[in-house]
Length: 329
Image (cartoon, rainbow, N blue to C red; front, side, top):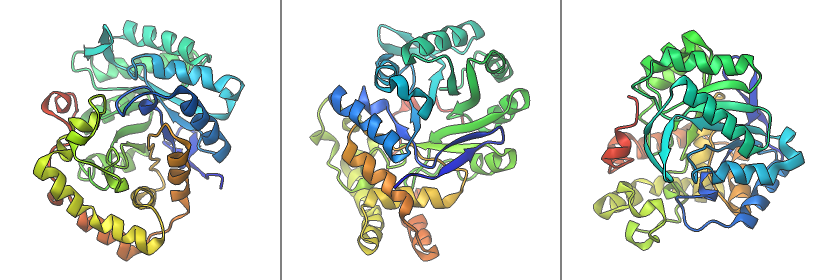
């Protein structure tokens, strides 16, 4: 199948209905496999999954370099989203930096690593409390007028900063964690995005793999796998979350589908302005994810999923304290 497209925002950004999160090709979920990652990127293009998500912080730097090597003449067939906003030293995130000079420095370096002359969607990776959002949006607006960037986005921004940014330069998309088991956006952010006609790009739409059903306890993952320190994979949290996710597995059986496909179908049916970006570095999982676009859930199935994984039913914070401190809510 070839994916249909969806519009993000009101400025003309149109992307594949499901995107591909590329971070795991370089970090966080076990050892890298460049050959399979490149094959996965090429297969994504064949399937019409052409909305590719990366960032300078992934690796750092190596993920953008991977995309640059992999795409070559295929660059024109894809929509590339990347991000600025972290201060990086010795390969680690040490803080935030969205000063105008730093934004320009990052964009220049990203363009070189990606081997392209423009970034399709540029996100601020995390809100920088030291730099007014109006200044950030103004700087990205200048880059848009210069032709180096096409569209502006924010990641994990709260309502106040979304409004401030959008008033200076239109925001086409907000990227935040949103899935069946992480619903923090529903009360305030999602209604605001609808009001301002801004698209939502959920990352970790499969709950970092938990909603696929193929999960293990934190201590069973290797040391270089993020899930080893994920609070929701640990101890009693793990047991409670496995029980809560049983409804996903049950509906998958009824639909003759995979649990992860049900989780993606739930997102796609929530709104035509939602474009999830499940991450994978393997063609097999990519093909499963793309096939989720064919699944239609009944109103009763949607309600059952909503109820089974309501916030009160999910156990444990989504991040540890240090990472949660960087979320703008």
